[in-house]
Length: 180
Image (cartoon, rainbow, N blue to C red; front, side, top):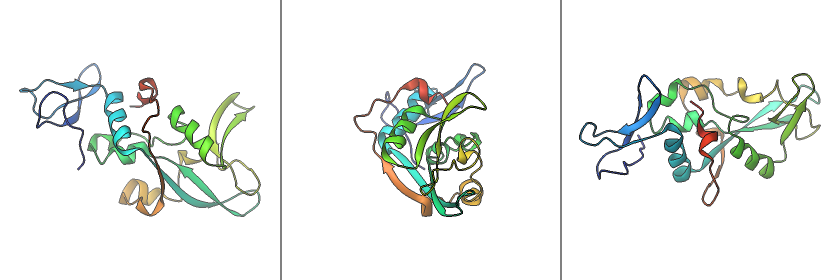
């Protein structure tokens, strides 16, 4: 298991803990070391260390019937490698972390900011590479049924790993990391 080193003691690592008020990361050497950081700080440290893994799989477009790529990140899946507490978190993917979504829109042609007249909102989603049709309802990865077994049950997403985006030198806003 990977870990984030404690900023106060030399041999401690942060583990996710809960109190009656909130979740936080505390040093594994508690009570000897009482160092804590917020969950957002913890996630930021992981992202600074690892970057963001991008996963890609094929889906048949419901409109043109061509195979199109679907792209997303799954932060909860990658964070589980640091602490099993993230296993209980819902899928954190496209549409959930705005600064990552902005990077995806710039980098991949099939990730777009979509405006829905029905719900009167904008959101980030995958569109077909061939015809531009929105893939799925709202965020196509709300229910990534094409890869569900590997993502949720088998924990074997390596075959879908497509890219890793380094966040070195990129501002990571804490408020966007308050996702659990």
